[in-house]
Length: 145
Image (tube, rainbow, N blue to C red; front, side, top):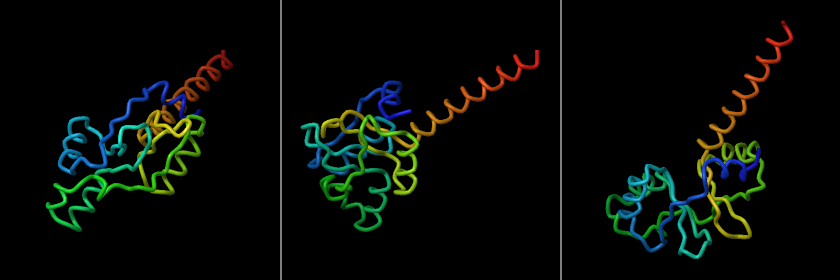
């Protein structure tokens, strides 16, 4: 299975914030959408960065609550690991696990077309395993009759 298959199921909407938005606005976006990370983009379809709940916690620990009025660009990760719609989900799972990050923007021709979380990848894998189990059970049942 590839990222494009997963996006076909979950959709390709992406929540983003501007690099100039303050961290307080970022918190509201995360809370309003019930998500753990957002893409940072100036709105041109390019990815300027990504910021997660972990980034916010680290910033609060380092700078205190004054960070809330700073721009998102002050705490975002600028070197973003991305993938393409053709990326294999097993490979993406390995990359995410090794890199210890849970959200990967999906780019096609350098433009943002979606985002995949580790939860999306795990859910997809569980579905694959359930289908495989059901197929094997059906095969065994038919073979026994």
